Length: 349
Length: 256
Image (cartoon, rainbow over all chains, first blue to last red; front, side, top):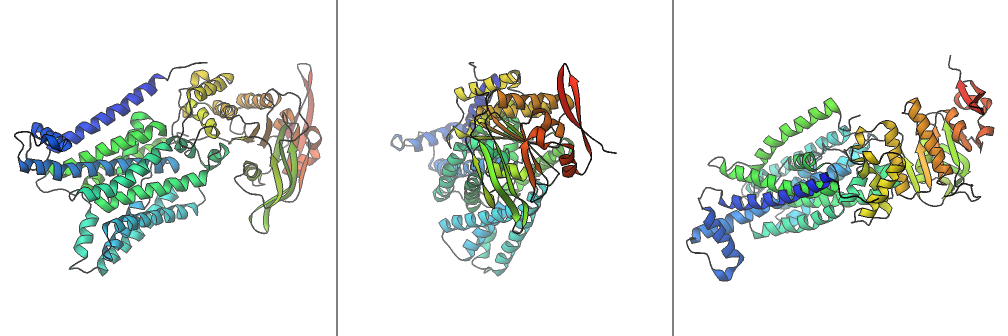
């Protein structure tokens, strides 16, 4: 019995290429957006000029334009895209392994745990790379606490997990408050507050590396395991009966997700709701199969956070905090999903 | 394709005991076995530990005493299959390939062809691209049967396979259980609350009477009025009748 891949598979693979192209175009266009006007042709010239240094800046591109495009905007665009892609992947993986489309890294406490870890590192004056490590530890701790607490209820429902996330988030927020209270208001507090607000404004080469390494490595593993996520999403007993090493697989995924989210938090502060909303959009477009959902979530996540950051730095004269925008979009989407699950039941049973 | 049960059991447990909390065994001293092509029905009241027994056989739980011996691959069919995400029927069946597909791998074209062939056996090939949620309860069970075939399992564990189905689909599913045992040579173990289902298809029955007492033997010998009344605390009548020229038997509980 032979069979061609069914038309919907073709369509969905085409969709993935379309998302990739749309992301590239958005990245290029984003280079043109900002307070200092630079025309598209000059942006293209500057970009090409920096790709092939021998060819020198093309005629007509001023040094100032070159600095704005290559040293200010490009790192920021890369940072926002990487962060969005990482959060999209993290969210889709979490939702798959926890069998629920209503969970996200911030909702179940990873973000606030990572924030606390990062704040602690700043408080003790640790190096920027140590901030990633501490944020990772905090995020992982929060995730373990939240899933452990949820397991006490002995039900596979999402409600215990979300409530546990709320509890854990509140706990770590209180710890962050305590750290702020204890921090030296002259030397440490401004750094902590600025870091917590979250922004891609201070993007530079070091931050890109700090985010790119965990996101690219972790993301590659997540995408490699994407068919295994289908198995995990069936439930423990069923996945185990099919021969999946459930516990080992889940802990591997949890570790990777925490690592990616912690890296994002450490370079750009807590950007909420992306990991929840993006996989939801992706699922609407390419379906629930994680083989396509994970790449789609990465691409859409990059696109989404980049677009949000473009809005954040261009919508008003003064820059808006990115976390504010993502929450303004994220909460209504979450409300919509909540309404959908209440009226229909996610599993339609 | 094996139609004559061979003498070596593919599923056997001896003096099996399990306790979630030390000192409070769910059951102990349970022994039973089943050979290729045989069907074993497990009966017991709610909370007696039927699902726990299946989890032990699946290896999800470890026995606190006794031992389990299984030969080959086990496929599990849960009571009512619900998925959190709207996978297609084909995607569900493909998950049976998990053992063959590497950690970072994905099912191949050949796997897909095997999955479609398995679906075709259950008359579901046309449904391959339909969301699993849109199937009826009976069709879902058969999809999971197809997945078991794809996984090349030789042991089938079913948790109340017909409990959530209407009468017609109960018949369809029981017939498939019978065929998978006799035609495909699978060793089938299923839990049920219906002694009549056990009597209809099972070769052997295991009655889980209490934590320390079970009864195992040929279905027609173990499934007696007295044994079942002791098991359920409800009187039952074993009725003999003729249908299309063949002698039949069933159980009727006397509920009022």
